[in-house]
Image (cartoon, rainbow, N blue to C red):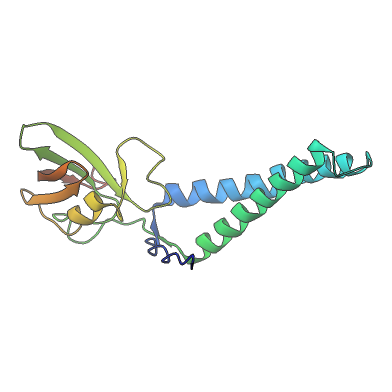
Length: 168
């Protein structure tokens, strides 16, 4: 039986300046501080002798692999991203970086900011432009109705406000 896994969908390459700064700080912290500290701890554990039963050595090597994997990912990701630091020419439509306020049929309002997949977990209200709601909102205008497939069925929202960070 084959264990084929379909490749993951390519994530959008856009990021805000704040998101890029956060990724670069994480890379710097891992590479300059965390990795040397763990390397030193592994070297000290290895000097104690028998490595087969040395938990500090085993877990230290595992942590080094995790750090190296994350560093490789961050370097590759930072090489291919596009920092979006200017609002679009047409501010009446929803594009990357927009704060969008939507209203449901019952009058409840929610406010979201469309960001890249590397930063949607950073702040409350940030959603990925690759998410179903993010894709539904992109290129839509004020007072336009948006339909989104959610686990409980279909949800209809109306865009009541579009703002960009420099407008706020």
